[in-house]
Length: 190
Image 1 (cartoon, rainbow, N blue to C red):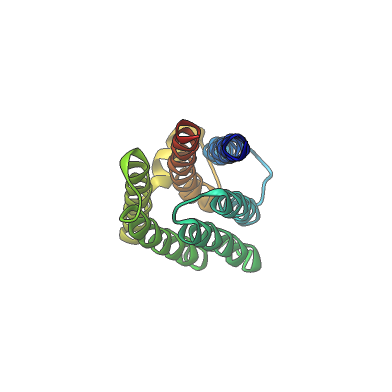
Image 2 (cartoon, rainbow, N blue to C red; image 1 turned 120 degrees about the vertical axis):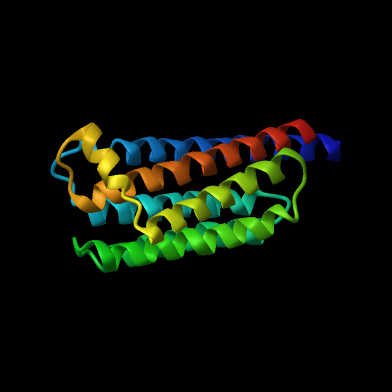
């Protein structure tokens, strides 16, 4: 009887992690479409996207059986970056790029360490998520202009939105896939 209860809680946990993964992917799609939205203040929107994704990721981290402290920390770093962007709602590019690069670097380090303490496909997806965040941080630090690509697709776009919308989208989509794989593994082990 006790194993039935544990199996049911494992299924419920897997379902909640799956919902968190989907929610973060929806935020990623929303972020990718930000350049098409007119009238949104870039720094406020990006700040709330980071804050929301961080809160979702922290909640999902509390549901994980393995490495839950690291998963919560990765979400907390994301939420903190969102707060920093919201508390400094300037439209200047450089004051905003620093917390975003910092977020990506710290998060990639946390996820890289986490991947060493997981196995199988979760290790692969955790490593991919860490690698994506590191690559995005390096690209932003090097000054590669993602904004040029976004502006060529969507037309004139505020620089902050053009620079960060696809960075957030890429990170969120990989994180969402990581959570979906964790949910799949939780469901399989139940």
